[in-house]
Length: 351
Ligand code: F6P
Image (cartoon, rainbow, N blue to C red; front, side, top):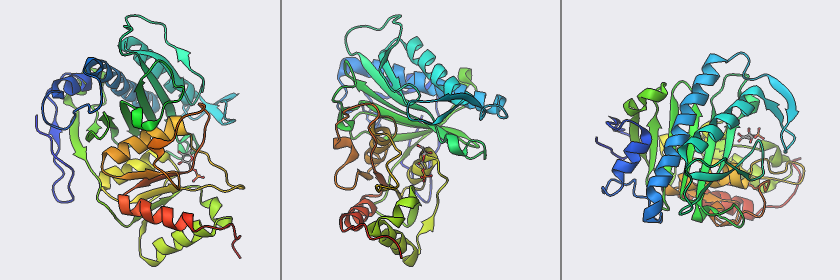
């Protein structure tokens, strides 16, 4: 199996010879190919790989579900989640699939999801007490664009910790984001500062060994912008000036309203910026635990940067599961520029 860095000229793609992604990851530890699990305790490596394999299986199952029940998946179930968002059938199904796969993996003892944002212990089958893993996830991000048939995704982060209390992104042992688009892809990284892999999954769980893998990395700058929560422009001169800067400097706008494709496009293209500043009248939507931290780990490990406006999102401590945050992700120099514009902000309304 050969893996190579993403490059504008020759993105190398290779078919895996492992029977599953987890087997691929396990086989890769100990080899100097970048899936190195940096900062992951040696006794945890196999377990983290087992959890990633469960995430990959969930990805294929959710993708199949979206395709098979496309017309009904966007139906609401008549409930709201804890954040007041209308719950869709597919939100509930995706949450159940992920819990099922993580439980089967036998390596994750507690989960917390955006659908049910409180820690839940999984019924233990064989979860050993050494290296207990906790998993946070947004089972299906982008519900508001699912009916329009835009790409949507799932987001994950794992910690080797007894609970979510006081964790921060820099202690996470792995993160992943699944994209359900024309292809089903999984972006995954294991360990602090480790490489980031884009895995194009075979659409059948039993044939995941035929998935394709390539390494992705980001340049320091690049003229692509994805401006979320644009309503905050009305209240924040700095955000207005930033958007004007992008237009005057002929940046390309690429924005769908689904965080997963809007951020993973930066990993695929290798440059650009996603911003979601906030204001009093346009408050933060994105959650630190379920959305900001996992995506920040992927972007930072791909040599990009993250910021809440002043500091890396990986430095921010999780005080409670519902915590929301401004989010800026992308090329290092683009994030420095965002911090400068938003740092010199005032709240002058647009004229
Ligand atoms: O979390 C919900 C979400 O759909 C994200 O996926 C996305 O980035 C954000 O909302 C879009 O917000 P807005 O429509 O305000 O730009």
